[in-house]
Image (cartoon, rainbow, N blue to C red):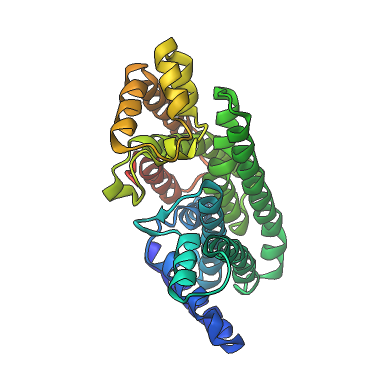
Length: 346
């Protein structure tokens, strides 16, 4: 399935990059970087959930449906590029983030003005381009008119919820306080719904699913989406840089107000709380300081608490698959995807 998705993305992006080349050679770096960002890595979870959502209806995909499902990956690319700008992340998937790559290009070419501003401006525009291309890839997939008309509201809701979640994340960091409830809401909208629930609805709608099946997908998708983001929170603090492609403890330096940090601060004693709050959001944290914060988070029991939450949410999600209308192939693949989404190291 990934191979089919990757082929569809490759064909689309290379065709669109030819159009950029016609505009002028100045856009060559844009074409190169966005193609590399899209094609050289990525789990393809959102297209996969859309694909499996379709299979769960008992419908087999054709080339047009695969292209439509693959378009969701470009929404994700937009989110990642913009997220790195907002978080001030230097790396992504073991390479320079887009804004840092264009900052470097500015310096290498001795261009006039601020290299960092050039990098940020370029990344914002490239994230916007990815979002536009996502819509274009969907609209030109060759779906039947009735399929496109039915799936567009799902696609639009997914994009709105993603942007709302991104704002909630930015606002949560600006509040400077911790709340498990608010952090869970950020997790639901910033990641969970657009990673799992809406892609499932997208595929199900293309397969002509009943409202009952779509509701079953929601019962599966919402808790699994939250578990997915909680795993992301753990990896942001405890992940191996060789696996994640980002420095150890990057979420600590960026001051991410995750559920993990909310639980840790809630469970910490006075001294532990002081240390966690003084380190959270400090961009100059060194390796030993990160290790100290990791120890405190573990000592408070927060890490074990989050792992238990992930397990319970995943079990709740899997119980929703006991619905007769889900085709057995879809049920089996959704079970596998639940494991992939919550047990990953990247």
